[in-house]
Image (tube, rainbow, N blue to C red; front, side, top):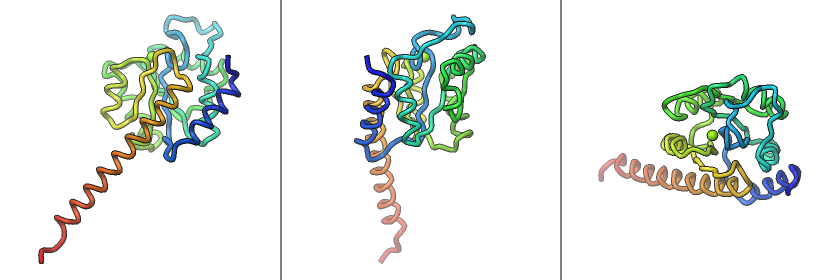
Length: 187
Ligand SMILES: [Mg+2]
């Protein structure tokens, strides 16, 4: 098994392959950062993360990319206690943990307000398709994870982020050309 340090180094290497990186990476908690549902646990237990999670978080910090949490868990107190016990609580610039019927769009509104980072500069990992669908419609590059966040999901996320950014830029250029043409005085 890879150690946290090896995962971190590999994640940093992967990030080096991309010209454009997200400004903020947002993680779900249950079945994304940790392999359980914290609502069903006692806060007196000692939690553990998925094997690659800690290395990836530290690699992002190293590259000055902010990290945040978006969780629909109804037990924010247990989630916060676990983040504290795992020694990662202070790493997050925003932690939105509350239950919601509208998937996670309200979580992302709040994260956007708190951090000022635009949606198209964010990358999001979650294990539930309904969250991925709703949040990607807001313009956030969103990646479905099957067995928690891994080095390969990070690679997938960064490559999809680059593709999305490239298409946003292409559209912007097309629009600029179009508006210059239509705005220019007629001869
Ligand atoms: Mg989840």
